[in-house]
Image (tube, rainbow, N blue to C red):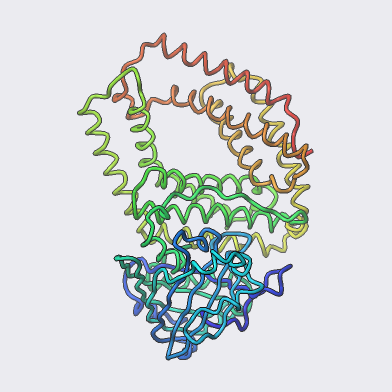
Length: 513
């Protein structure tokens, strides 16, 4: 949105104007449906922010600015031109938190205005500077309002837009909620209210990103888990929010790719994002997230995970069949499995387009930012929220490691379900190791953590293979027959490997102590 007046400022970098913006895609219907909502009926129209917007985005041939998380554009409206530089914030999440610098221009780039911005450092290289040229354009029909909601002042923009790049174009409708005053949680609360009038899907795709996707389909690649960067003095509440935002963002970004491409790895990474989020909730549950709203969120995310399961299981099964060296799958069997996969993806896409799924994501985002767990005045809750994250992480990782070592002593004596439960505990500890890594950064801690993570990954794989042997399922009939003796040999071999890895893990030095 235009203008930097009222921009929220991020603590520690108060000299940098910040844009905190929530973007929602109109899944179906029209912008007119949204305008019927009472909250927009009461909102103050902003004619100076509305109208036809013509934006040209600039980059080098190899998209060097985009790789660095920087966008550069000139937007024209009513004969006036504004140059805007945006740079991604330190914590990538659902709400776009970006540095933003705006300069009135005469229609041509003013790169001198980039001094003191992330772009300024980049174009210090003359070759880079002279290589910047128009890359694509975005035409937008905007209707803007100012809404007061939940103690916040929010600029609301309804956009019907068209991006053009190369010889391709794409049209889309979206709503942007930009925080002018107040807390970011109000953005999510308003989004849920507006979704009563029309289905709104949480989006992390900026207009610039849509343009780059027209130029380079390689941009449409699955999004893997990003590194979690935590301040050394982070509190428990701040830490959970940083982790949860990252996990949900991974899920949402890959969901968009699943709808576009139905690629197996996109669905896998979407599921990874969801599992990481559920693991994060588990880590903080007993002390921070034991309220009824948090329980509802856990239930909703469990449902979402089940919705992803059938299609992903078939992807894994097909990959397993194709990788078998000692048997060629029957063509008729492969045809039937592919048919079932097509049906599973059709059902999955219907779920992703459902109001329930979209609302679960919006509700989860709102809960992360401003759920009851953040406002609870219950005795001891505030002290838990403000507890140093480093102390919490050390205690929680120690507790979980102790439990795993205890269960591991009886690996051969327990049933398949108990071994599967051990694998889940190991996976959660592994995620916890990733989440809290930036709190323990000494050379010794880093070395120990790498060893620890490697052992957990190895164990997770062995126990996963054991679980595959134990659980036949409805697809077992399509696998080549394996003699019981061979199955038992495989099982014993995996048990031996698991026990050996567990013995090494039990003696490993915790990196958090």
